Length: 396
Image (cartoon, rainbow, N blue to C red; front, side):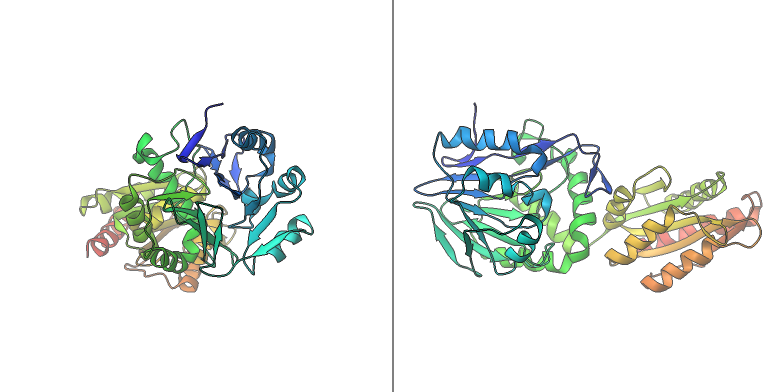
């Protein structure tokens, strides 16, 4: 079996998941996802994070193919979440004497998921663990994105095993390293991963980046997505930008429409934004596009315009999840606009306004509510001017 080496004695033993339709059972995976794991073979052998349990046979085959009969001495758990850790029981059955390495917050959740762990080794901030020629150093990155999260730095090679930081959706299709693939293909899935997994804890992610800044980093090996060895400045720059929430010039228009009228309104709004000079205008039908894709672009661009038709005194039902996610993740430095349709008593714009007030959205124009279809010239003008006003706010 051909082995994938990060360095002479450090191996990639991760797996690809093209079977799962959803990540965490709610985020679509059109390009799949990888579960990355790494093996360091020295006087002692360390396994850095296992994989999702459904891939245990493939995983153990890869690990054993490298070890050629040797046993694993340490299993480092950087993160307790089951997409990382759910194969731990099988790993412990395979190597019963293995020491499980974690920090003070690792083991209570881990044992709540999988039962008692006999051989535990608790490490503290900055502590090192010698494997022989290689030495592991541990740094706590709490809430990136669970309380027990940490990263492991291998001092000899300069590799950071970065847990969920610097990760992304998408399987590794032949190329494992960043210099083996077209980065443009992976960037959108990286940002979508960030916006929907890490974005809520952006400040903690930024602190983690600052903490790692003092290390001599030659490679970044995350738990999902590409291993970074040639474009470190690029990926660090992207993560810093997303963590600082520095949006690009652009407008996202999202609408929910039962019979198409609010969709027509969205096109008028988008036209107003485009003719005001915004070249990146993204229009989404909330009934057709899963929320994680929309949140990714909301994280990317400065302007957000949301429209919803009325539905039993409230708004188009699918829009509820998006407005909840915006208020939950609180993307910063945004300008907003609202619009919607009604037939008799309304409710779409009213409900959107409630979410806007709760989330303290920066509304830069009067909301537009249209009765029936947008067939009157004044309706076209108001909708067009809404798009124009948000665009002008985006351009500053």
